[in-house]
Image (cartoon, rainbow, N blue to C red):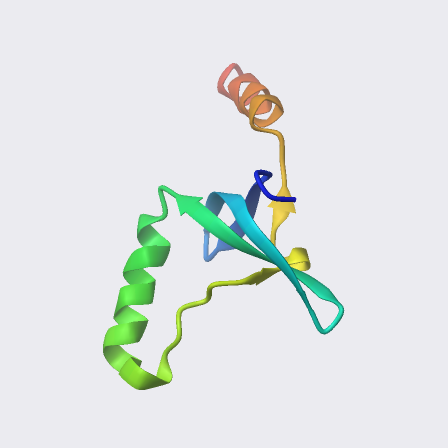
Length: 85
């Protein structure tokens, strides 16, 4: 749903973002996501474009099973507990 916070894995990093748009295509729901603090992915994306040029198209839509919604406050509370161990 638009406005929901989501995460996905890229390599060994977590990517966090906010859903900004959604669409249905071939029976699947897809989301456009505004990613935050996404330096590793953006650097990789620039490198891919540099190497492939016309052959490379940046991914704009993520299928619903490629991202996981989460609650920011609950996640921060759980991470804070890890810091105490």
